[in-house]
Image (cartoon, rainbow, N blue to C red):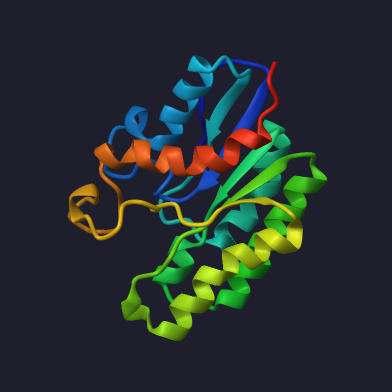
Length: 192
């Protein structure tokens, strides 16, 4: 499901999972809706389309990316996928291939891409967590895309910033997520 915020000329598509789909909180309180508000406040001529689906993996994202790109024709694609691959212990090499394929399709369609990284908890083992974390920087470097190294930067082990499942951020944490994305997104946006 694609939800649109704003009605301007250029489009930013946020293409992610539950972390961007405002899981467990009101959609209008999620970081993607807050992004639309910030763009309006700063008079940046972009609309925001949230094409995020809770539970989405990079495989699922790859299956539907062509349709989303064709329908939305984004100037910028914020690619926030991979967390569910990690939580399911899927091969990191497969995740990297899927992310690469989505980035290539977006770039071919004329979109600038911002890749959003995530980390796995230590109980997945040191080898897997290290390989998983480095995957985002490797893919971003290979395709010369902008990168948010870690969506939850600055949240640490503060469980008050997470819902009871300790996976999904609370409403109060959404401005932190937006700030983490904004640092890398703002340089990709052209002033009117």
